[in-house]
Image (cartoon, rainbow, N blue to C red; front, side):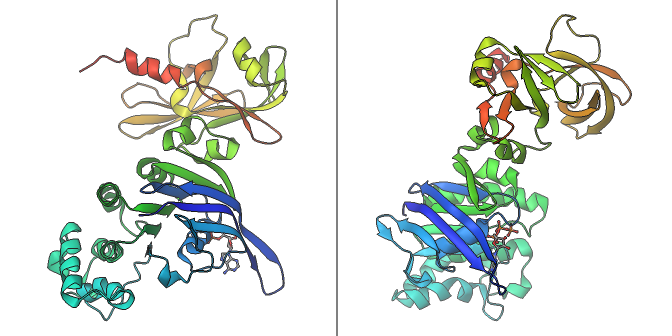
Length: 385
Ligand code: ATP
């Protein structure tokens, strides 16, 4: 187990024509001993490069990586006490599962053979693959191969696990199962883990904290709920959540927000106005589940209510995504599955002020986030079982 610290880590690739690509740009993250950190971001944002630099598979252009107090920039990969699990499993096809799992220990330690054998058996049991030990990878399903790849990392009892999209080749159901199992295993083993994914559901459900990258630049490192409810900037707000947060360009006029396309005007309370710090060009944001939708008229003089028409209803069973038209603008709302709303209907929608986000248009910086107190109030108002 080890604390893993990245200080201003940068990676610049130089292409054949001399063109430079900054894949990772001064990234600093302090990963606590035993923490499960998920590194997430869109394709090409630098996740794998960051992981490969921690593993020692890629050199570092500048900055420092430490395992506990030791700077490991120049320590060869095989001496880093780090085990990596890849999306592609990377099992040796001609070796049995047992050989695949024992190979690393045989190569990198002087552990006696009987101890290696016992550790492989014990780990195989933990992973539920003890009956597969004498099979070759080609005789296993994708899910079983991934268990072997994980088992091979676990058997080494490393200081740090690095996982690069390890579940993406599995079908949705198996992926959900393995997600829970991996979390349980990581908690049981207490090994510091850095897990790369582009899937924000994995990030939300698995990590103690999430680090969000875009274009090689770190956007936010925080708990999943903080990233979701109090995003640092427009990028994080738009990246986390499906369907994505609704956004509108607005201008502050007096104590009101006026949408640039004229679709709505929205008065702000003095405390929200104070958060805006006199910035006039803003982006207004509200998550689909915070948009309230009612079919019979609203409360008449609530200035946070607007009349909209229902374009499309996308039923998902437990909830529905409702696509509404407010002027020329599309607004997505997520409502309970049994709420009767049909395409073509006229609806009253409400944006509660406690749930809105405001960002500076120029920089994307968050100036005001939804109140978490209102979430506490909602929880308290729920009938107890
Ligand atoms: P994905 O989710 O698609 O795997 P990623 O977030 O892991 O993406 P990286 O693979 O780290 O992204 O790549 C980051 C950037 O660095 C990309 O622009 C990529 O094209 C570039 N890159 C990665 N490896 C090299 C290389 N060996 N030579 C040149 N450019 C590279």
